Length: 153
Image 1 (spheres, rainbow, N blue to C red):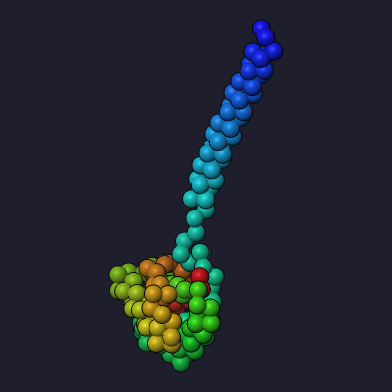
Image 2 (cartoon, rainbow, N blue to C red):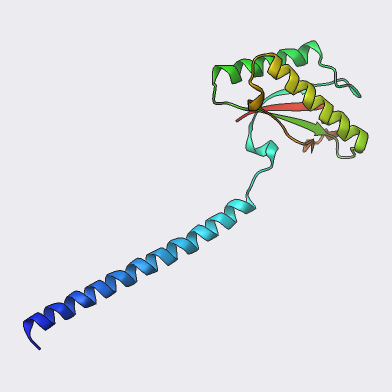
């Protein structure tokens, strides 16, 4: 073999080895990304866990009417959301663990009342998200069923 053939052979071997390393790295990255996606999906939070709690709006049992305290909490949340134009407000109606259809409907009505108050206090409607009612994960869950949580995103 001539020196030129030896140089070509070495260049070809280096190119083949480099290509093999690139393919191996791409496969390793794909496998680790897939595992990361599976782990992320397993740890996907519920709507209530995904947002930071800001305020809790309390309602009288059986009522969707906003009290003076509820209006104050809604005004405070609206002020924060307006001050940072990038924030959205998640309205999360809570219900007790034994909620039936009427209790779920009441929780939804409370969510709509809170949304209406936030919009009336200057939060753009497209930045107020009302989630479906969730079962309160609190030891005093029955009492928490008279609550709507307001969270900023």
